[in-house]
Image 1 (tube, rainbow over the protein chains, first blue to last red):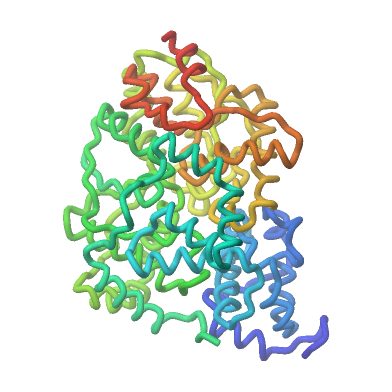
Image 2: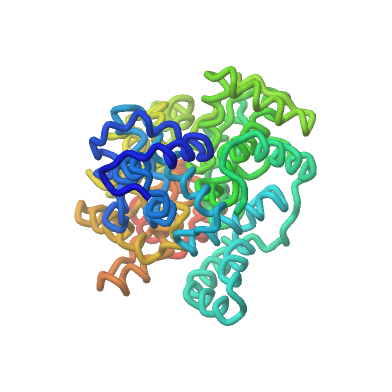
Length: 196
Length: 293
């Protein structure tokens, strides 16, 4: 692997070709306003600017296992402020997606929550909030699930009491089969990389 | 005026008070809503964990295609996450011919097609520009009499496109609050993110964001926080006890939707229309005191 400071185009090429919005980093001039604008920058191991430089340096493992790529709250501050018009958020999401597809999974919780979210969209076409949190907390078995649910139990009970939980069971949208066909086609035509 | 209301998944559950209150308010302002038939989820901001960009845009193109073929009215999204996902797809459908062709190839799998002519708008845009401030003032029979409110804008209601308000210094939320007699307090953190869709999975980190927002609102004299997004409302209201436990604070401040305040100021029923009974931190006392019962 290339050392920091050296250019190694192999990983950059991989990112341009396989990662959604990956080619956008070509415009980066390393000004750092993305990191400066990020609400969770203090929690990241690398700021987006660092990540883009590391891609050019060929530091594949460090980039794809970086927690920074899954700590994006999707607030769009970086995209709004980037003077070179890079949709930084889309690149970070693209990297996170690619990393998860490669089985690297930098942040287990967000990968699991987002994974359950997407599975539900694919399965019924909509999100049922109560089932999403149940599935999310119980992905690691019953014990972890009960612990997780207890952590938000007061909140869940309050919301139930105040009529903010949909009591009807999950229901598929009518056009779910056609929707799945469209999604399958999009997965085939778009980038994002093959499963590991 | 007629619109498609794309209320999305959250407004059927955690954001119920938003949906209940926005309908009578918009109706009073002369708006008429239709549902997008058999709509699907927008994908929100977290679907990237399981899907590629094109698949997520497909979700939104399908909704836009159905709206287009059944009237083509402007689509109104009250949820900022729904809004941003849809408006993103809509921009690309309008501006990028290659994308439009690609999307039509995908939609063909479900016998749909899209031209990209339908507008997607946030409800704040529609309230301000179509509902009209003068009209809102005229409709206000029970003004909030100087109630100090922090108008929290959050992220995805104006960023990244800034279609109807500034992306750095938005003013419309405050103008709407002023139109119903409230006093919008200066609130520098009104644009700071609440943690949005990664709140549950990164709660420890996101509690700090909520702490800063609440602290700023209260330090500037707010008695109430107004929001225009179900994710913002949930994160700001439902995690105050966890913020208190982590930071030793003592927050207990009601968080309501702008449309709930408008319903109250329009003299509507505080339960049936303003849906105040859905709030976990009760806002009823403060609002009643402001409007005079």
